[in-house]
Length: 102
Image (cartoon, rainbow, N blue to C red; front, side, top):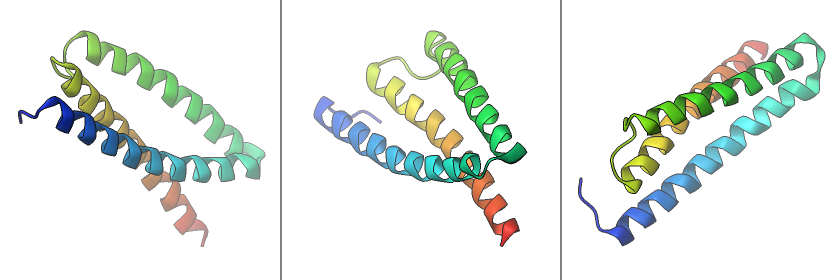
């Protein structure tokens, strides 16, 4: 879809804002697990760091190979899609564990 620069900037800003809200929820769920301590908290902390390092490496490869798009708007949207899927997967995993506890 071809969009003008102003629309692209606005769309990207809204997408970043909504992703930020989702990230906040996942951060709260993760912090609760880590704060609970024990092996569960340690496993969550290790998983969090491992995922972040892996995501940074994978995203750099995607960017350098052009898989995220060929212009800045496409690259930004591709990056947001990438992180949105990671955040959604973590949200599902963390809320499923909460449901099992209830």
